[in-house]
Image (cartoon, rainbow, N blue to C red; front, side, top):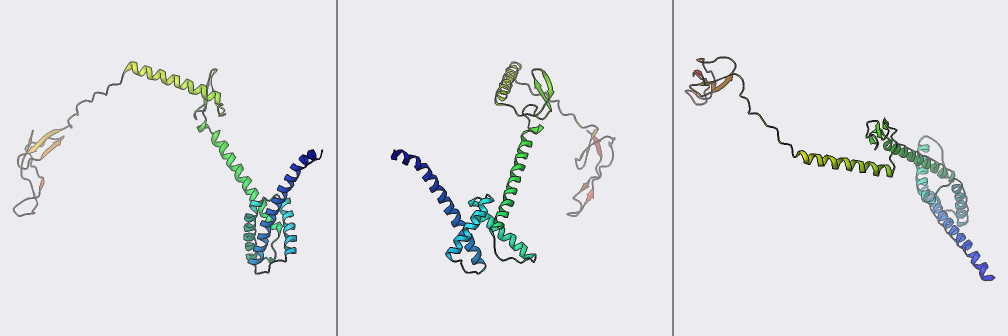
Length: 244
């Protein structure tokens, strides 16, 4: 009988031990923050009894507000920053309180919840956007066994995806088979390049060639040449153009 009673008490003892260990860790973390604040302001550490009493009071306030132990440091840093801004605005502040840490936790939690809502909203918009729809592929029309209907952009189930993939593979196989029957398409026949319109003329002196729309037969060439009686001198060609 005594052995059975001992077995019944074991889970309760284990749970109590875990709770006490968690409380001790949270109290130690809070005590460290309280001591840090006092040292930062140049104050003497509290006597051990006062330190324990203040830590217990802070722990009760933060537990009521639901502040996780891993967020104590973040709440402390945010509270110190907020106090600096209030002091810069002319407010007279002395002691840091547990309420200030709890208030900063509520701000952090509210921002975190808003970010999660925005991320969820963005994910839902992306998944249900017409352009990302697996049913209509952005066309707005869904092909069903009963005909083409307006698409509601509801995501496909796994069974519907498998059925559409099988139908797609069947169509692709049919297209490949038909292409093999036709054979590889031949490249288009390119026509020989057409000569430019107009008449061709050639200078009997500098061999200049021109293609123009007017008759230049017997006319002076007049091309600018980089040679003459002196080196580097420019002159115009005196030759005559003839049709070729």
